[in-house]
Length: 231
Image 1 (cartoon, rainbow, N blue to C red):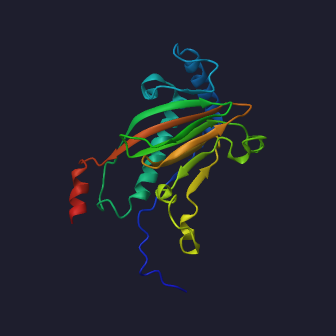
Image 2: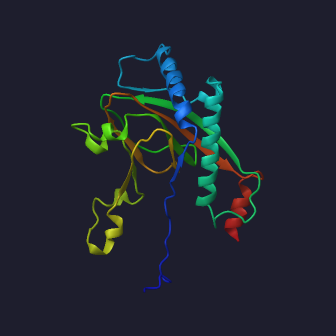
Image 3: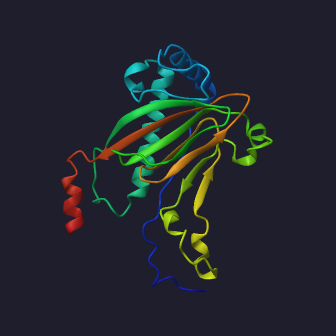
């Protein structure tokens, strides 16, 4: 067996995947709330294939089911962040503070998509699926097939592959993207710098997601991280 002593596995990309235990009982209500908010938005085109709300849902929705989803998002983000930063934080980092900088919903159908992008002014982002066609029906679309409505994440080396030599020696680079199927109740947490897109979606039901941006701080401020890095 080869010993990987000289191998330094640097700069991995952490992605957390979580399941909301109460999804089946709350998703339907939340979708109806989102649809009502869209219908009462004077700036919205009711016939448009894509709609995105403002990112101030923390201030606009007051429902126990919504508050439960927000708690689930924060708890899942905390778990992902702690696991991702093992070995990078000081050994004692009490009082972790998580701030949701923006949270919004999107409704799409009829081939609507969201092109490749990243998120600014935050360290982590996420997407929660509230509604989509059943997986078998989604994958059976006659044109879009299994890619229907996927979220696609692009590896940090993706932009360098265009002019790179691809051979047997760098086979580990040739899986340059990760496709995540939309499943109701599933939350995907990812670094905000990670390029991603929502592929075109068409279905009997709308694809409804909740997205967020978040920042994470230690109770004593970020200076202790800088001091740790200098040691």
